[in-house]
Length: 132
Image (cartoon, rainbow, N blue to C red; front, side, top):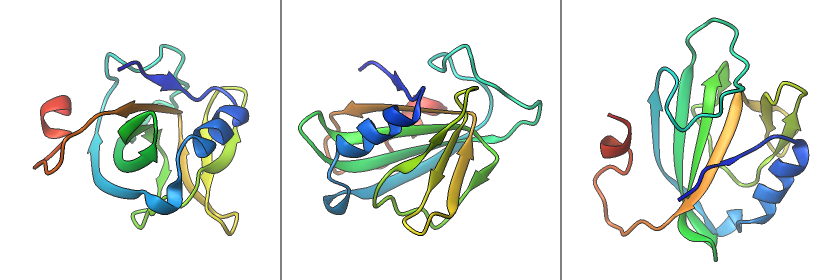
């Protein structure tokens, strides 16, 4: 299961098109601190220890049963996140801004990583064994 990195706005668009968001749901959200071994080396951090937000989505995709998203070092994150699509902007430092359908910013983060995974349900906690 290889991680994919969002490097451009076109990468966000491709991720958005890779899944049917209307038939998907967020099944788990977890936060962590610090740099993980699978993070890319070119993360633009501002010196403040922001949370990394890990989101597991019950995917509707031929690429896997679930989509794992990692929003690295979030300076803004909506606690009412319900991903109905992924739309946003990536700047030249590869920082990501995700906007909702009204054009309002819901997430600001240093990087966005994702991968499709096969997960058998039910499960108690997908992230417990992977992050801690």
